[in-house]
Length: 198
Image 1 (cartoon, rainbow, N blue to C red):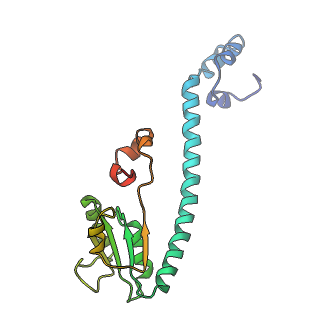
Image 2: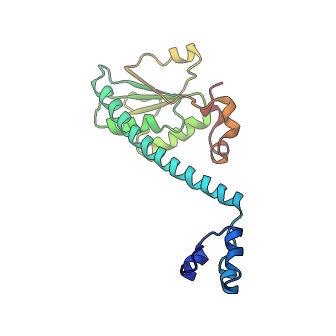
Image 3: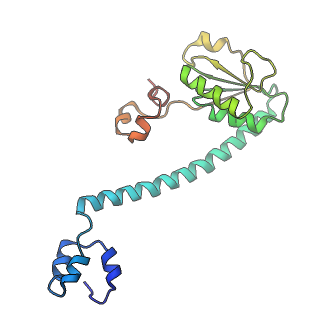
């Protein structure tokens, strides 16, 4: 340990027990200033949290850029589609369907049907559609977005919807055996059924 460092720097530095003992013979004040800040396990845990935060921010930025590009491509496909009738499966809160609707709202001949088999997801999607002025009566032919119940695993349910020019989907993407290992913020607030395909 170099004794020429400023006291303020030393006070803010995390020191090992060995460094603290080494400084003790030189000054009682240094021993107080060099009080051990964290034990090794806490330091390792904090380092993991910081690394996870950096990775999460990088993934978020990468994912956001990918999502923007993918959404742009979806809008281009929908604009070129003959009947302009996209279908969004497994809508959850409606993010994909409503973003697509927002991007295509100037095209009067576009109609989007968004489906899910979860009543809570349908309600959230309807609330989001209303909040963004994209809602309409599900039975209306002139609504930009129709939000309906349908189970993609039930052929009869899907047949009732008719045919579509484009299908987008946000299917469950988490392995069932990985659910318990997820962060509590995901397990406590995300729908198990929407994230895990069973």
